[in-house]
Image (cartoon, rainbow, N blue to C red; front, side):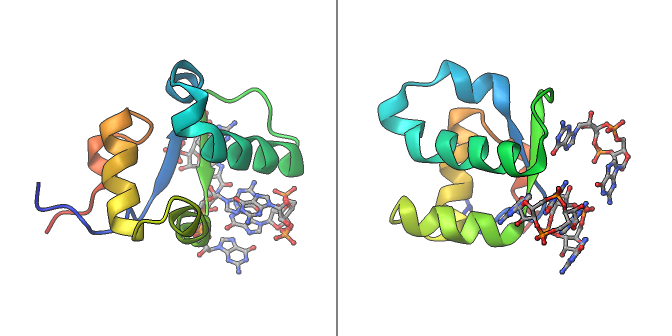
Length: 86
Ligand code: C2E
Ligand code: C2E
Ligand code: C2E
């Protein structure tokens, strides 16, 4: 894929996230849970997060924000449209 551009609008699929093994998505799942807790937003199927949060998560996963975007699309946690058109 051309890839490696960070997502601009980050809407996490929470149902998909729960289906994936914790050894892969553990840090992301904990991050999303923390944001849900801070907002009191527990009932959604999706969670919109800040672009700044993608940068923080990329550091945690030792990837660039663009590489992490590609990984999240591969996992089905972000929709393919999350990758900006080149
Ligand atoms: P949208 O951004 O396309 O979001 C569509 C639907 O996805 C939302 O419908 C909601 O059911 C879900 N959704 C998206 N992000 C989250 C999230 O972080 N938590 C939860 N629990 N659900 C989420 P909803 O709520 O009826 O909103 C319809 C539209 O109204 C949104 O479309 C957006 O255009 C606007 N909107 C709602 N809340 C906000 C907001 O906080 N900021 C802005 N700028 N627009 C908002
Ligand atoms: P805060 O950053 O001081 O934000 C206070 C309130 O401003 C939020 O209350 C929300 O109503 C609004 N707000 C701030 N930035 C945005 C934004 O980009 N879009 C929208 N729609 N609203 C915004 P809320 O949602 O109850 O969040 C409380 C606190 O939880 C926030 O205080 C922040 O410390 C944390 N938090 C919530 N969601 C996120 C997130 O996605 N990322 C990060 N890093 N922190 C978050
Ligand atoms: P959104 O609400 O449509 O906000 C779009 C962009 O407007 C945000 O992108 C941010 O750059 C700016 N923005 C909106 N409200 C505020 C604010 O109160 N303070 C500041 N400094 N900037 C604001 P960003 O940060 O990438 O966030 C993307 C989406 O994540 C937001 O879309 C919203 O759906 C969600 N989000 C982010 N932070 C919070 C939060 O604290 N609480 C809630 N409920 N949602 C948040």
